[in-house]
Image 1 (cartoon, rainbow, N blue to C red):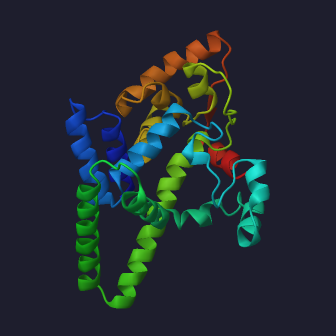
Image 2 (image 1 turned 45 degrees about the vertical axis):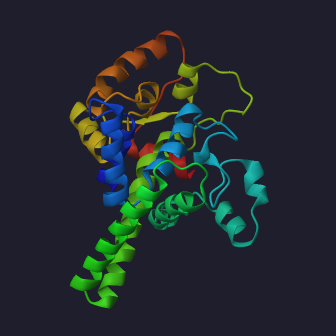
Length: 262
């Protein structure tokens, strides 16, 4: 499912087809009917993230939740959440097993209670039909116990894959104060981390595994650029950053996860 989510993400960024309308149709179909999450919810959330990555009070990806990204948020936690926050680095991957279910629930919640949601009815019908067909097939083909086990494993794998694909790109990178005045280029470069291998073949593999998000800096600078072009552009961006002494962060897969959980 995560690979289909990557395609929906690329359609949302107008990377696949010629027009915005056809990209939206493709993205909505993939997100609603294949992946089972709201395309409009994702667009709303993701657009804010791209405009203000790692910006306190503006980027929804660092809002106060089970995991805290700011000391002030960590102090607000109580009970079990405080215990989790104090160990959130070590618990990062175990918590991701619940992220798949969380994505489904949050997007459906948005469709029900969100204000001025475009295509609300269409998305609810598509997701509802997808749930009915999917659950119907699983419980028809498998014994009940095995069906529940399959759903649990599928949701856990989906959550881990999604979280492990998006988290290395920004988590552990500098946070930007809400009132900071910073130019577009610096904002996108300073808050992003590329995850690269030592060879071009390795980077090609990573681009497939991560849906092109391993070139996070270039994706944020040129969000409509197809993933196939990001590797070439990264060399230009990296050279420009070196010339102008702008920090450009690159990490291996192991280093990126170490920085996320540390």
